[in-house]
Image (cartoon, rainbow, N blue to C red; front, side, top):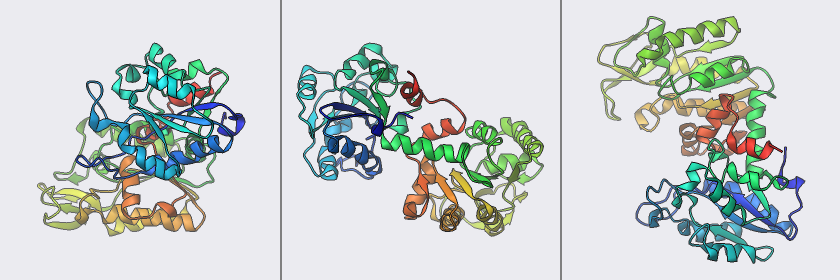
Length: 398
């Protein structure tokens, strides 16, 4: 793997693609969560410590028609300066003459942040000319933006062509790849995957790919009801995907053939409407009344899932067990999070990835008690599906 430590940065400019797509307050533009920024600091600091300078590029949000003040990276400059404990320079464009003048004369030890890449439509189109212009900002290209590694954008993949012998992964990308590989190919057995979320259709490919990698798969969240109905259960008004019923049965059959244990919920918390203040009760998951919907797993299921988690040495969690955003239906997701913490204490390797699962871990302040938390939602999902990510492939290619 081509990493920061394989390259000499002394007197060189490192052009680092970071993921500073952080949530901002809509009125004050203050940063609500700086996790992605903090994740990039070690790579930036390493280049500085090695005697080089750093030019940073990132996107922020989804600007539709060119420059838009609310998506300007200028909003994060002061906070980045605090994180780096030094003034970070900023330029109001990413390919203007002023930007090139600043980056070409950037002294060792200094940091320059370019304006939002997505102010140019060419970024998402993977435009060659735009990528070539961006490449002029550095002597060495470093991709440290795992969250965008599944996109073949100009700054995440195409640009690497202009650094055939001077490109590498940053520390964050290196850690993401190594930790996901621990689950997929290098994990200590037994390996358990916990897959939740709303829809089966969005997780089918992941489950199929994991069949050859894991010993057991726990299925929770709204997607579980499609499996329950496929097996003949009564699921009331719970979320199901009719067009996935046959696929759900196929997955259960494949799991049998491959000797992979599939664990489905056995009881659940149901509600008479999709509302935090709805009437609720616990029932057998196969016997949900017509007008009621399942919104969380309950005690018997939690016990079943916890026993499987505690037997496992390597555990992946992607997707909540219920509608955890509502307090009334958050118990199942929190219980699984605490099970992972307990497993980690007993020296299991635990990996949590995907927006909602990470949000849950952060909501319960458990991040420092999990082995590794992935910063990439869509990127991690595609990696788990066995798809070669453009941002990774671009660095690995000679």
